[in-house]
Image (cartoon, rainbow, N blue to C red; front, side):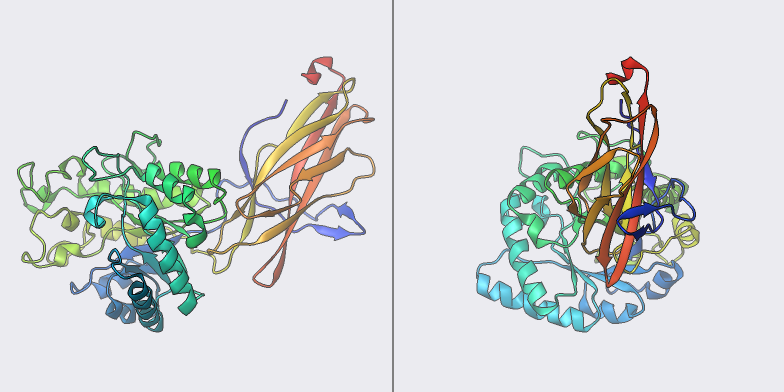
Length: 456
């Protein structure tokens, strides 16, 4: 039988010589947390101040909306949201994307998000249509890369939503699936997503009929199904809405700017706790997630002529209308961080890699599987997988023998002719990443038993 417990293997560099495996000086122990992979980010509103407060939050990323904001954050990594109209003239559209890209890259943009929440009618030119968005993304990606190949292109963050009969929204899961069916995976470097917490804690388990923070895991399952597991997901918006009553503002079901959001509100301390726990959960559990952008810093500071007092965007903010910090602001500023690695990093995630067979029923058996993950900066690499040669143990084979990050490798062992014993096997995985030769290994166990029942 194969033990199905998942563990994260933080691996030591293998020493290879003459085609045989040599015992490393010390074996690494399974780790509960993947290597650093998150970026810590915040949305900053244009024309509303807040640049100093953004510095006090200790974020390494900011998301901005106007080109002039980029110069305010020259010491940060920056994501620029490029909102795009549906083209009436595709040639003019291409020219506009190139010109806008050139402008924002010259000002320091590190990444560009192509549009926003196209699965919502309010953000699209008509009823949301994944095929249409994929065409826009394809053209924009090609034009952006023609001007600035080094820029990270992020697909538009999808809004978590159910499909509505009136065309106001298409489910994020349905929309993403249709994007992948139409080839969108070739036209983004990382996938954008907006996993708001709504009124649930960040650890709340995901399900197709639930809207919560861990819905990210359902998006990840889709990406793996469509062979996109080697690409990161960036959480380009997430957060929790604070109860306006804490600031003496009465917003209820009768207010058109708040009534659809009233059910999401939590108190300020809960908002603070949930945000910090969300960063921590993603850090410990989602090796495939990169930068996370908290919504928002300072939409609360817009004038009442720009946003009504009960507009929901105000109450996600970490600053109050007068610029004073909320409880969440202080909690986020003080939370523990593990900065994103500046280059791709190879990590192997394996099952228990253990199989037991009877001595009287030899043959080829499956030992287990492991996934090759990029737990560093966005990018991709190809790894070579080779079993270490053993003079006394089983013959070991793997499939495939080369794999990209995001791929799964299956390990087999031939127990023919082996005596009863426990045999340790090693799989060496090597890759060249950013000019470095990186080597990792996975350990497995083949147990040959005199118990006939082990044949089963």
